[in-house]
Image 1 (spheres, rainbow, N blue to C red):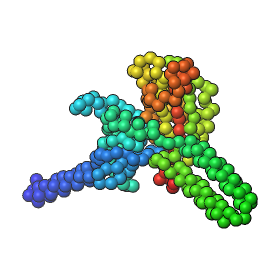
Image 2 (cartoon, rainbow, N blue to C red):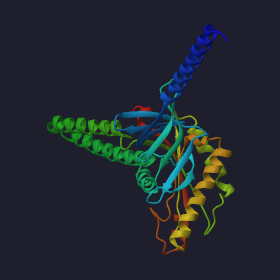
Image 3 (cartoon, helix red, strand yellow):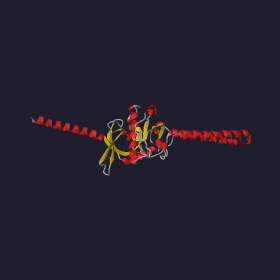
Length: 307
């Protein structure tokens, strides 16, 4: 080989090496890791509040969700996407796409943080209950207005005073309507409850229609999420009741996914609530039956709803 050929070959090797280094650096530059608290879920995306601001994270079926257990996080438990609920502290690893979304390869958290997030989710105020309360208040206020109008007709001397009171009551009603649904981060637009026999975890077919209607309604809500919470009565050991509540919740999740057509990216499932939030006394068989339940709700983030 001539000196000229040798010189050209050396330069070619240097150029190729430089291109490889640049390419490798470009790929590495896209890799990222963030740590923070989930403050929103919207379909396949979630928002993580970090020390430097919000990061949009994109989830998919390849995303690995891990519950790190033990003092040194030596043990890991694989979890589903449904465990990623608002209020959960997470560590996300992945790469950014062209839309500046962090496509998650892995999402890690610990069980204590999940329990905290579960407690937060359990405290969401249902919109349906708010609506009933607001309607009762409006009816009471309307009755008061009617009474005041009767008094106005009885005496012209007090007409101005009562007219002012009526205007005040109407303003109060308008204010109540304006505040309707403004509590909490989520509105709950639909809800159904599935009950279970003692020791049973299989969804009774008699609940199929109610669950399917809930799934159909959910699909009409922009950015909807399905929340599933399983409960048990206090009959039996705490460990058994925790297991029963988990299996009941999971079977309902399987139903809404397989028969209701709801993707798991749209499911929030704190899941096993055990014997928390008892709705009736376990001193009677009737009360125990009411506590063996799974509550399914259609949620919408208020930021999406514009309320």
